[in-house]
Image (cartoon, rainbow, N blue to C red; front, side):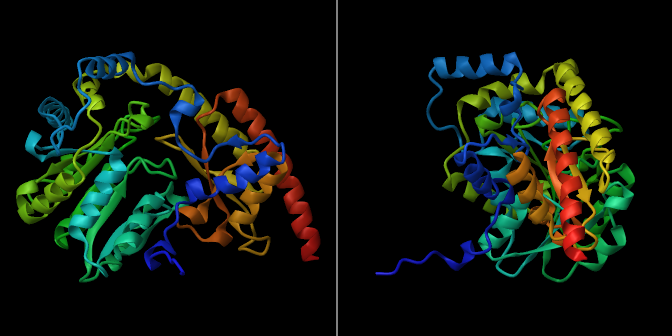
Length: 407
């Protein structure tokens, strides 16, 4: 007997975790690896607010260990809707659905909307989850470019040019993963106008909207007017530092414009039963935390962001934009348009020689020859200083070897 996997899995990739296979090989050789590939705050000492921990524990002690309603418990849905309204995002508790992380929310909406061959517009570079989901259901991801020379802002004219009769969804990640860019209100308004003019549903990925260093985060739902369906996706993972709780939610604005889609979304939510129960009881506390709950976290992240930006830009052959949100930086090594290899060559070489794990930019949709790579700057400043010193040493020898071979 020959057992073969479904063809849809052949192009199903998730570089953030796939590259860990190489890191494990290095560790098996007795070498230490510093992991800067995955955005998990818990790995670096960050913990959820105590109010959320206590609410979660109380829920378990009070016996909330069964299934919740498919869309989530009423108190949590009401709390999310109220918090959304405070940010000028129109919605109702009936249009809030809890999911197994924001990732499941994206999967449900893609599945509810896209037929095989339909198209979804997603940023490049962008979070590879969207590529994976589109591949899984036979849809086509069409990438719109973010310009590194314009602080990773999208090109609005290019976005317009990519729309076809099969385009159904527009994904906007703000703040952006992997670049750390924060889109301006003008950019967002222009993107939402394109969606409005072409009858697209907007997926507003805002899972980092509280983690802002400079500028102001503008919720996409607040720009929807009264005629554009916007599905805002959030979670406890990043804004509340609890990724392992696996609780996310979607908040739908102008749901009345797509009743059949909402019916399909609810049907899919029913079929998978529910999101985790006990963390839902922490949602009212989360939605009513004072703004100061993130002060210490943001002070630490800002120092780590600044160290990353300063030290990377001091390395000959490497440049990096200054992230405005989240905890990622998208740096670039000058590979001379691919003459010195690919982004993956650089990242794997750094891993093997210096024990530092980043993720190559082509895993997020950039060209391999362009030399981009994503850094997670969650470790403390002293660890990062050591990492970037190793990066500088490796980069110098990398260029020496490559240039000597070219001669």
